[in-house]
Length: 348
Image 1 (cartoon, one colour):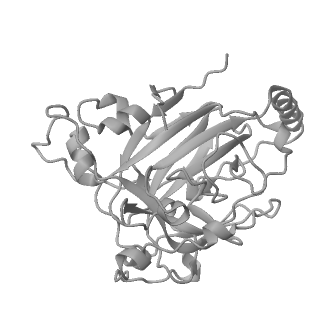
Image 2 (tube, rainbow, N blue to C red; image 1 turned 180 degrees about the horizontal axis):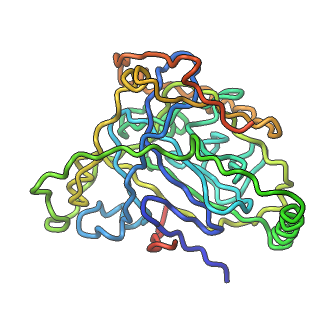
């Protein structure tokens, strides 16, 4: 029987097939115009819900999974890694597919495509909302209607992020491995490139000397968070060039990622949350890099009307008055042409 265990390794989620997913802090883009890819500014800390049974909300215990802290209007992107073997990964935001805009499903679909293909898709910064562009993932509280979930379904029930991985069927995977062996014997090794996917570290402030210890007191409802959208950036969501029949019919693993406010993170875990997001104008003034990524051999998925109609969080929370300084052309860098503890899954 196949191992369907999802594990947490540091701040990396490892789904079956060694699909690795990291959640990366980044600069929030202005909600007007289209921009280069913003930089990675360190990983979000990720913790298992099962490790804090006395302080997480009861509903979270039932769903299992992991949790991470986000600030209001903080932006993130998802970095994909692991082995080079093909995998299909579904990404949900409040149980709405971030690629197709359709309701969450435990089956892969093609019309429209409801998954990204790994390793061809190295990251995902937002929902697929325009030809060759995505709208940035931005954290907002549930209850305002600003999330993708609220705008698409009319309700805000789930929040968070959902992930499901699918492997190639065994005969197809065996054939792929054999082809890779033949190619490796005929060609020199490819150079490795860190670039955009290698998040730049961000130093956290010293933890207060009297951080509350986890445990003690009954669990309560947490301030639930979900993902809305922010500014637009140049990023393609690649079309699968394999027949749908090549993929497994059921997911190999799945995980629910709860988003929690920094005060709730401290209450639940006893840990200091990460520092507040970096000022984007200061980052640009320092001459640090932004990125452009283009794969000439890959086809871009057309956006769906559902996701194209999602409005940015500024329409719900008010104008963004944070100063913006666009990167200079020289700052935009072109790219390309260990087992941890298992994560408990529950009902969701």
